[in-house]
Length: 443
Image 1 (tube, one colour):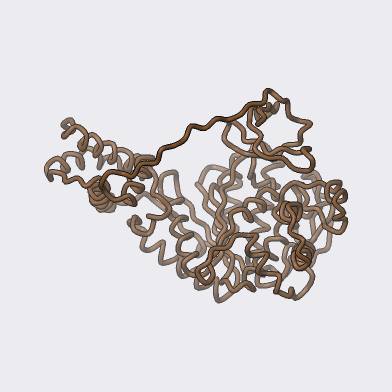
Image 2 (cartoon, one colour):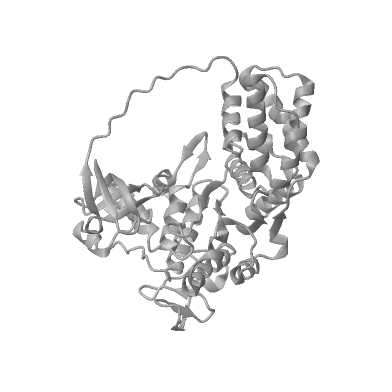
């Protein structure tokens, strides 16, 4: 294996390569993984990773599933598989979300905004929605935005993450993006799609090489690489900040294919939407907002996006505006919308802040398409505490004396004002002390 250095991202380990080793997939020490051209990397050393054999021992007593729950609580989170049974005080919000799913099935396109401060349970609600969607025959793709890799002003990378995380269940089998396209070989599109028509045609001819998948999944593949492998007819998925039209066009085509695959529609869950509010320049902020605006109007099937007439060059850098004010790529402009309805349900999660872009993003969603999460009431946390005690006792086959549990309850309940994460962590820590040492200090 190779240890390399990048002047911006720092040290990392090469875990894969492609295109005759001109690009390397590098896992950086900072926690993210990127395809990087070899010319921008400095080789530090070669080494062999020696991994000691891991001895797996069965847990002694207790319930394994309950232990997994406790280990997640120890980190202050509710595990994905335990969300349905560990949701408190959100009946109204869940009812509204389910109503919007019914609206989506009727109309073929829908939007929804979830907003709330840190610790109010936005991620927990998104977990709940993800499970609900999968169980009700929807395809889902959940992504988290960040300021560097999957940033709002980098539309190709947003698309790449969406297809990487796409999944749905049909007839008891779980499919991903590749599985969806393989199913789509029998689908006849109502009109040619600039990208998916070519991908489906290649799959029909059993051309299943890695280059095809890297291309349609949104990896960065320059024109010269496609030409080298005799793929002159494949259009490049552009990497420009102004390529919002291309990405929206791809997603609306994906929404149509999902519906034709026998699924109720495509649910896009975008978390950390407030990333846009903290970008370092007005230019990146404007391009990021153009992505949000494009996704909302594409999802709702705005018929103005089926065609476009370019109006003038923008002052945002590379890119052009159409007569309706939507940004298009200055290299190869395309419509935003492939076909109506879009087949997409866009759910965006944000943390409110004092920002011009918070106001602009909020204005994209009518009030009836928003919910604002506040902190749960104390009585909901008391119910949560009682549920944790039952799970903990089941996990470790432990019986607690009631008066000691009451002492713990008095100690941890004030933490409910700080939010879910501090409450979970402090409760588990107190129970660990009680289990190991038999008592806890007096409050």
